[in-house]
Image 1 (tube, one colour):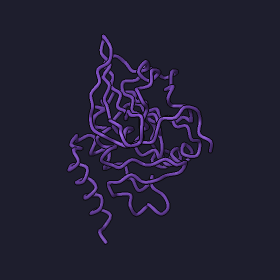
Image 2: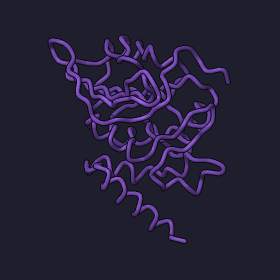
Image 3: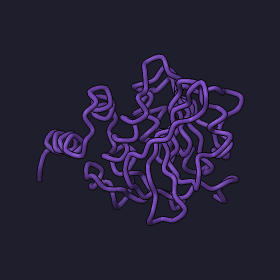
Image 4: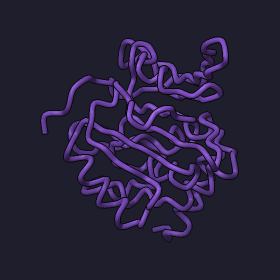
Length: 213
């Protein structure tokens, strides 16, 4: 059985081999122990590059996809970031190492309770978590420098586009079905929005309303 240090080294090597090369992103992922966010039967798979099930029928994304999404977001140290879809809290914890301020929302109270407990344990002070319908963003805190969406919509939601600053970037999966989704980067310019495809992905759908849990 490999030691924890060896598994963590293999974890970072796997990230690099999948194209996560940004030094700040790799450091943030090294400082965020995925094992804290994976419970039960799957705890021993925490350092494998694979998605794993969590409560409420959701998943914790595979680390290489988390890394590529974070890298595509190009978070700067002074940025205010909105994450839609807290899930386990893993992605939000990584963002907290990169941004000045992170707001994260999820429609499931159960997930939010568990994620908040981990954020408290890790003493993350620049992160605020809400139970809310993320498809409407957080108008009270807008505008945002960066927005990350961890569930797939048919198109980038209008309220989220509206809450993105000029010069801001949003990264999200889009697609109508489980099987055909594309991770895209949306950049807001003075004159509108520019869209760029990054890679095919598979995410749970972005649903409106609060979860029944």
